[in-house]
Image (spheres, rainbow, N blue to C red):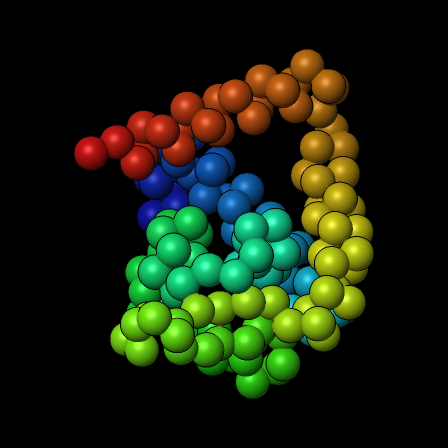
Length: 147
């Protein structure tokens, strides 16, 4: 794979971030599938569990995703009975979203799987290295999100 070595040699940090992200996402998908969720759905539900009912616009902003992407995700979660969407009584153009009672049954499962994912992700790192990695990744994210 000559092309891969060119990418790796010219962007070592980016290559390792991409590699780690792919492995992390794959493992997250495996763990979350045990409770019937896909990657990203747990984040959406977690916001609703933590913040409570909100508009779709607020939820999209909170998750930093496009409204159209959120609409697709909400359709799937609504079909599964995990969220409830309704029209805002004061403005029929606004859609409000809340977690269903059924979704509450998944909270412990999500927490358990994220805990397991965290443990697996940092198994080879000391506590100091974990803190440093977290700090550095936050800086990478800040750099990538800078306008």
